[in-house]
Length: 86
Image 1: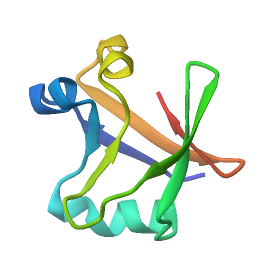
Image 2: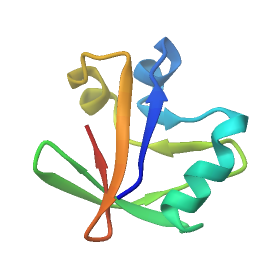
Image 3: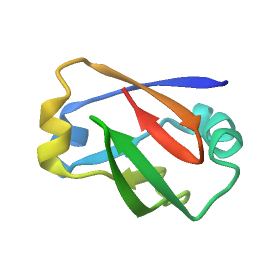
Image 4: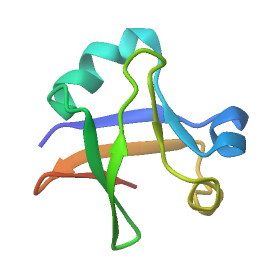
């Protein structure tokens, strides 16, 4: 199972989005399989049909859920078709 580590900045927390850098674009596309939407699993809840914006390299996640993450980094994994945020 492949895992990807992304940095969280103030912008991510303010707008409630998961973003990645340009040099991580290929890794994210391979992890997600170029999917247009993903189901995100966070704290044992599944948030379905989150649109993946490859042009601006972001996935909307929710401001309140972003504030629950205390670390400066998140790990993304694919398990059972869901994108797991930890």
